Image (cartoon, chains in turn orange, red):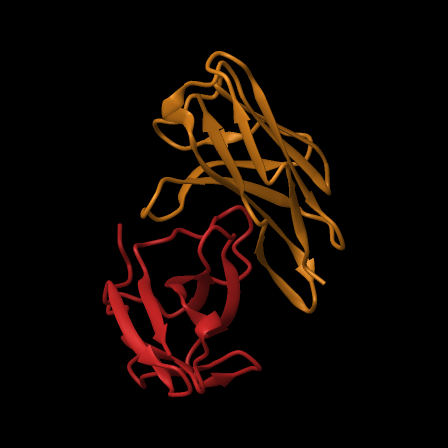
Length: 117
Length: 112
């Protein structure tokens, strides 16, 4: 149990385009989903927290109009990077909190590597 | 607001026990100690957590000092696949919307 999937695993796009990343909890319902990003050789940095049906709460310094988060159901959240630029190139990781495998904890997806040319 | 302190890196010989320390001198009475690891280019993986008693599962053992100000994660027989960054995190269990906050962790290199 406790499987979180992300799609795509890797994406390369041109500067100025938008990219959507999907995060799904496959075998449990996620009451809350979190989005992190990670630059090379750095730790994970929280970007935003979202609950199903509610607006996401963004961390300081994260532009909500640039990083659009939709949490449409208890098993799906999407992150859209709008008008991507090279500095948005990073490893994006989603995390879902819920009850799975006897644990009520935060489980992580495998990550999406975004490269903006 | 770093609540934990870990050494930046450690080496361990394959087959030997890897002992990863963590200091959390300001831990509160209702905070648990969690350990996650991140293998290169993957998402973090839950390892183990505990409040004050020592814990063991199929992956590792967690030893927490009596005063709870420090702990040690033990991988009893390290393999090359255990090479990863290990994160020690203190937090209240079942804390709703509160996310896991990652520090810099310890980069463990298991050497053949």
